[in-house]
Image (cartoon, helix red, strand yellow):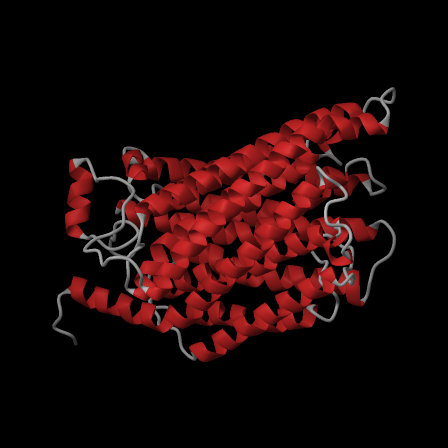
Length: 496
């Protein structure tokens, strides 16, 4: 038995775990950031094509019908999934207190995943899109992604199996569920839509089932797992309520998978399918409010920490947005509002708020905490972190507002039989111009973050003694936290 003091032994254990994770997690982060830049450029181009339809249309591969699905799939599979896998593996290893074994195989799986994303993107730009939203990659790219993920997902399950005896934390529940739900969703959708395709209106039902659940049962659990870890970790206090955590997790698992059908209100589908989806969507108030109360009461009395911790600022922004976008999604299931907003930019604004405002901001927060521990270096510039945050927050806020308002007025015009269709296009034009401007803000935020990330990998900038903070730590509580443990990215506390 070791004679080391408990804190020292724990620090050594965490350092060994981080050392085992360094290569694979940084690989997923680096590839994710590269895809984020590529997806941002295509997204900005697609947004401006909505303002100037003939922009760059002389090249076939730059037409809107190719650029837009390429942007969508790059963001989903190249950025969000890659960074989510990296964060998920790191969190699972830390909470299970097991080092990663055979990391070379995980890196090889990561390489294969990126090959699949690159091949699929090239296929879309070459005109081989499958025209199934969220599944536009050509059929020959799908097996590459699936086999790569199979190797990655196994790692998460194996780490959970070999975890140290003791409490299973709420973040572990969400991560384990996400690692199991994604292959189920991806395989089922591909079987029913590509390999043994169903016919007729069932195609729409399966497409919405997949598109909705990939947000709710893949990205959402990873984002919530990160928030449930980072908020208590930085503050140095436990999650407010264990029982609210249980309620939030199991009610999400019970209700979310039924939600996608509410996008088919008014379509040629059995009434029970749509009705069950509307009821389940409204029932989503239960997990969302449970999580919101838990996060808020964990933060209560410590909101000043948002001034100095980059991890907390991004994570809390994402957690608050999760509450807002989830409540908005439940309200969109109400038929009277759905009839107004369906087929409009309102739905696109909702999707951007979920994938970016919630998930991406939460992942940024996690990376500000994790990367310094993997590279043994501090973020080189607090000013650039502040630029990153305000460009990202301002960009997604402007994008959501323009798409939501534009979609609302667009819906009013579309539902008026006395109004010509062209009028509904003209009324949304100024809002799409603002949306294109917001895309530039987001792209600028991503380039700022990419510069910071590369500097971290190269260990550039002056060496710091403590964490890179956004402001001076003010209160007595915060000064105590900093003296006790000044690790990078926020405060350190014993494993929660």
